[in-house]
Length: 233
Image: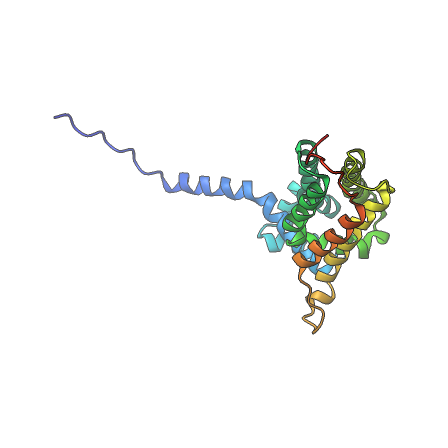
């Protein structure tokens, strides 16, 4: 009978430590972004110091600057990770969606709540509303990175419904504002009066969004002609 193969020796302590350090290094950008988002929401952009972000992430200030050379660049990275990525995914959803435009708008709003509104990222809206005037360069970045692309995405969706004869011929830009304004209010409420635990200030976010969509869609939708086929181009 042949001898069983000799098992390889266990990794040395140095090798294990090296692997752990590599994993830790790879995780650092994400840890820094999470720490930055939490502090920006808690204290505001102006009041948050870079060393506080580094301390919360468990690294030195110098390490923070290896990944993000300034607090402004750190904030931009937070916005890109939490909002820009979602907008890009929304573009793909709109391009490939085959159902009604009402269903498409509902999917987009549901995705916004699940990925942004119901996460710490919803605090980004509070930051921009309260501090944009003091940081015009960041405000312009936010407009270019978030506001314009999201308005274009929703505008294209609304125009899809009008083109297919599903929606009334209304100004698409105004419809987009009617869609966005209530969810911005919801985010602002969550991080202001809603965070204080005051009686009468509780809000059921899912119910709010569903009600908003029912109101907006009922105002948008045209009566479907008899014999119309769902999803017709």
